[in-house]
Length: 286
View 1 (cartoon, one colour):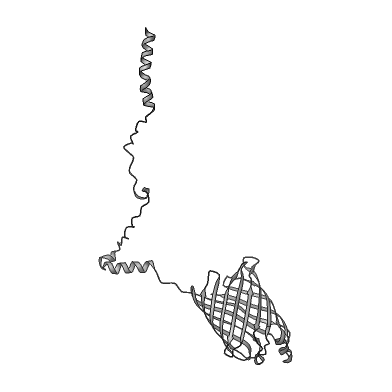
View 2: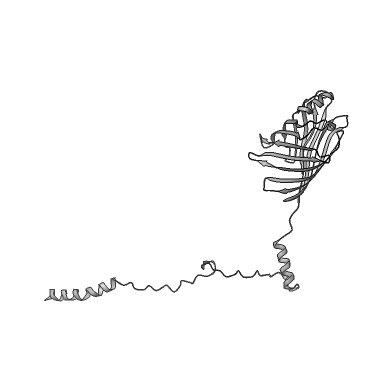
């Protein structure tokens, strides 16, 4: 009899268990769970709230003036920078009469710049052989290159010319500094110049700098004693010590060659077509 009662009870509870296993009972959330607020909420498309201007000046100025002042603070005027660099200021020691040379530039601006460049050379105790000044407008093409255009004026014992100038200046891979320019004179004469330099840092203060320059002319210029094609080339090797980053004395060597018809003019005038000099000078910038 007991066995029959147990079987009847087991049969009665089986459907209930099956019904319970087929349905999930809802789980009530704890009372201490808060709704998402602030940055916890999902992103939406609503506009940002207006900027609160709680400056004490708002008590004395109307909203329009305060808004204009806030806009001016968000868009300040473009700063103007400047730099002056004298790359070469040197004495050249060689057979015969010693000489000197300089090369430098100064500029003002940022992406757009106004530039002045100057270079020249001569012999000690004699009139200046050649000097030039360039007034240029420079526009940055990217972080590494600038486009330059303007005017160049020659001075010295050589025939003085005025030139229109167009060139680029920048750095190529491996940090070679390049300057390339084309010139058109007021007499219709066209020339070009390419300069390349590289700073090899031997220590934190000791830098070895090779430099090269070539000059070309589209036509012969007898008055200036210049032939056509490749007219001259220069090569320099200078070792400088940066007492400060802005000031560095240097020593080195400089070689120069006249080429082609220009060399023929030099021989006819009794000048050497090749020059080798020991140099000593300073380089500084501010």
